[in-house]
Image 1 (cartoon, helix red, strand yellow):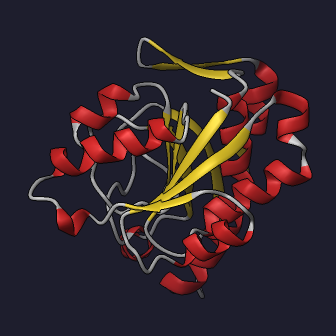
Image 2: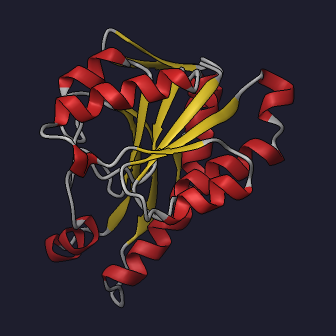
Length: 214
């Protein structure tokens, strides 16, 4: 899974983190791994401009132009495969994916979620964590399944919840962990050191240590 296509809907900060790590760590020179395309469902997504500056091919597939999710996803699949994509990386892609898409790329779609799953799936995770009074919060990278935020967990990073926290301060600390964890997870999956087998994540001890951040 050496050719990566990233899906974004907004600023793409996690896409930037993955791309910058791929350059710094020479993913292509060492493993032949590279980002071959960036696709957004929103024409105004700021991450597209960054990708274009970096010379990465981009595409916009506006979901508003389709009557249903499946029609949108069929075109999305065609574009990903047109880029030669083998591993799909969701980086702030704000669309719920149907079984049509998930099954097509089974074991080859990653997502990052700003909470320690299985706690707080869905939206507004930082607000909900504060309301629940948890003392530890964080971020999870997982394989995508047809259950929202319910796929097999690849790695997690934790941050303490402070008495002075509000949703914005907590989000910023979690985001800093996202930018460490996601590039590691993407690299390890792309180089097949981490993989999905019978809906379970398989990895060696070294990879496991890299994907548990405290």
